[in-house]
Image 1 (tube, rainbow, N blue to C red):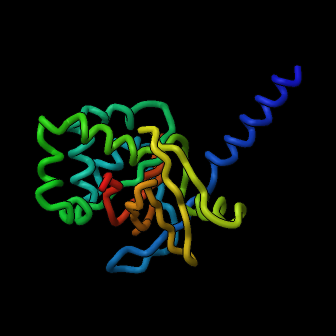
Image 2: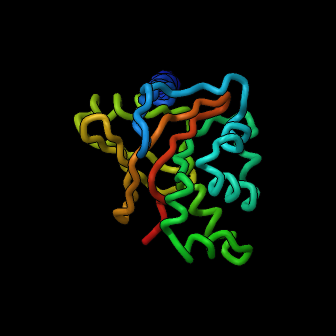
Length: 187
């Protein structure tokens, strides 16, 4: 009976983390209204496909055959590198999109996916309540650490690769897409 109560309590605690609210950030060019935009009845796949500054990661999910995950009923958070982040990779970014590099691309994309519905303000609230950094395990099995300096949120891989939240998050029916300014690729 104690084990059942402990599991129930753990489930409640984890569900609280998954349902945290999002905070808007500013894009590189324009200040935003600080809101997480909602796409009503669209799935993450449709929302990602409609985002003009996320076309490279959209194409990466399509070519890796992972896009179907974002049409399903599961709840995910995608740390979505904007197109400029992939461009900054240069030739390495172009090579990543080739058929020969597909297994590497799949691993990279899974390390940008988090389980559950996490908005930026939820992550910021968790950082503030913990009094510091918050670690989350990606769908690829890697740990990423979220930290903040004021309202600026940063995500860092265990190898030191990091990116900053930029622009507004997009809430879909089955998850949240958070634009970031870098690709969380192993160095």
